[in-house]
Image (spheres, rainbow, N blue to C red):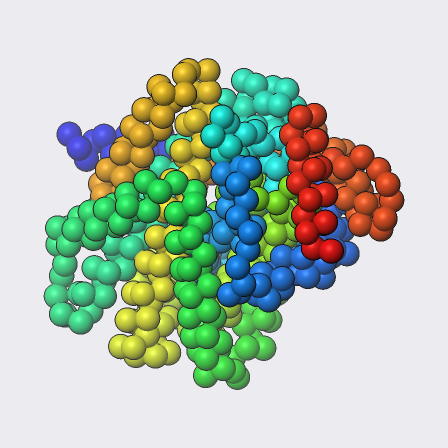
Length: 506
């Protein structure tokens, strides 16, 4: 009975996935990024230096310094909002997803990941900007925003906002399933390698329960606790991965030219790769690269903007610039290191597309570092996955809040609590489900979530340009009305906050 149900779900999802990740959506994702790039005059290039100087650089300089607490709104710091957002994007897709793309789409898929990331930088910037501009504040001062907010109040298509929120809710549940499934699979594989025996599903279930319990403890504290945990884990896990990846690449330094040659030559070849890898058409190479790129950096999904909208900053453009750095770090740093590490470690002619991506990811570490590499992978991958799980719990929570915004605050709180309980239970349950099915289902919901968001970004692209121009003209000293919020009362409040902040700095 259970097997028939799973088989039925798999068949339905395969049909939906083929539609959702067909050419229309791929063109929509790429086209939106190109349009926004043109309209913002290549902001991801012209303002990249500024995105660093106003985001990560002052954050690093401010480490250890005490900051005055914001008592007017219940928010998190810019870095905590960024850390939450990046923890939602830097997950298994950055390691296993990249390996999967290369195995099934060939090395050329990496090139199309880069293309999607380049245009995704300005897409993510626009999402964050609109998210902050249309965010709302509840009676307790909590700031909430996301794609469904700017769709409902910017585009003024409230019904589409609800559709986006529903898709986000299911995507959140799916994302937690993917990440937990990879955590349990990784730990089980490690135990099996060291014990040289097969591991039963009971071990995976125990791992799933442990992840569920830890997640519950974190998400009970809301965005503040999620932000604090993310801000501690993200730098540690990212730095650990970067160091190991760089060492592995240096160990195989002679293969670097060949790795880049494969990426560029296979990107425009009508066969993804030779040898044992299954040959895919040129179209499939693009689709694999674009789909995995979006799965990894989430630009276009309208997901990470939910975390950014809780930021204490009053300037939408400032948080938007965090989005530029976020996609750059996710795709051009983490994903690229994974791809080069994989391509310099293995001879692709000896691989095949039906190899298990998670097993090959672990083998990539063990080939370079032996048993130490296996242990390191067992630490890094679960950390990447766990931070994604807690970030997406918040995304799902905010989507549910939006869907039930019409009920009383007390009832809405109960509904959100029910969602959190369900989310935690499904984390444990997903630990033993077939990996490919979990991944495919989440792929489908990611695509469904992207469509209404991209439509809105295109429609509001003029507003993105206007707010951006307003910010940079004010920075030059021009005396014009700040565009901080779509709502007059919040715009006035934020103006006074900025004025007070500037006076305190003098």
